[in-house]
Amino acid sequence: MNIDVDQPRCVAAGHCVSAAPEVFDQRDEDGVVVLLDEHPDEHEHERVREAALLCPSAAITVREGERRS
Figure 1 (cartoon, rainbow, N blue to C red):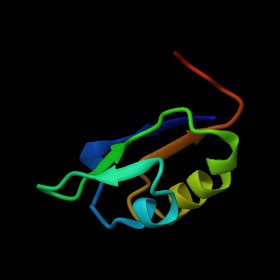
Figure 2 (figure 1 turned 120 degrees about the vertical axis):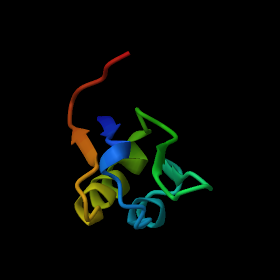
Figure 3 (figure 1 turned 90 degrees about the horizontal axis):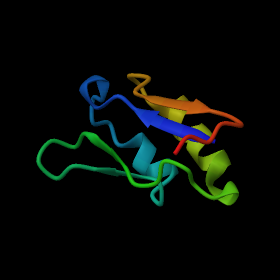
Figure 4 (figure 1 turned 90 degrees about the vertical axis):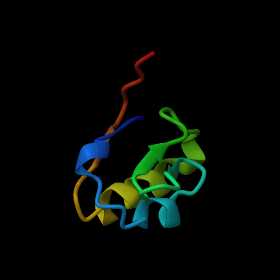
């Protein structure tokens, strides 16, 4: 799994942090998403998928089966 976030697109709703707090956080100054782990462990994958689905601005992209360095 590979995760990308589009910070300019983020509306700071915080759903990603609620769904996967080990993978996403928010900047203190404006609430924009911060990616903590671009390649999370397998036990986090379902939470990451949920976070991407819940994102109202579609700022989270998940690519399955890919691992970039």
